[in-house]
Length: 183
Image 1 (tube, helix red, strand yellow):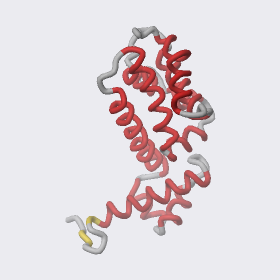
Image 2 (tube, helix red, strand yellow; image 1 turned 90 degrees about the vertical axis):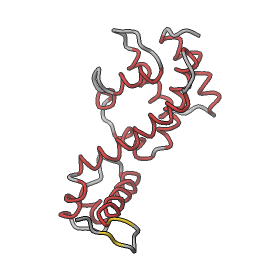
Image 3 (tube, rainbow, N blue to C red; image 1 turned 60 degrees about the vertical axis):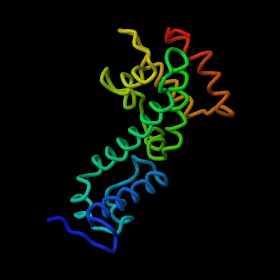
Image 4 (cartoon, rainbow, N blue to C red; image 1 turned 45 degrees about the vertical axis):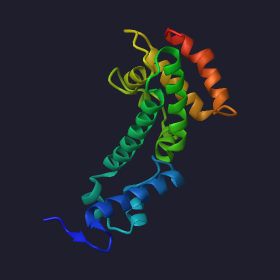
């Protein structure tokens, strides 16, 4: 039986998980993802370590849940921005939108800053590079298109242009032509 509490307008467990997630986000921003411990999150959320583990599994599961939510948001924004676009226009919009969405998601941005290696970010053929190729429409088999797209997005995240128009022009002029997409 699910415990309801009229004071918090819903299930207590859901509210407790949201509290742990909120505490983790705050600490990720303050300390970085890699330097945030389960104990620190539990203390910030106002619960015991046992409650933390019961609610979110473990630290890795917590990080995964927050990154999955952030990544889903980035993908949704890219899909919305590229709806109806094809070729170079789609790739340009996908890359610029992905960089903007990542910069706007503090947890994803903090996680990327903490990565020791791009190998942690790029993944294998089923990883983020494959997703990048799909979202941009770059689908040449046997190419490094996905890695080029991800590296380009990460460069924009790390070193933003003066404004969105500058970034869009850089991507359209120098990144997208390497993908071999129709104009």
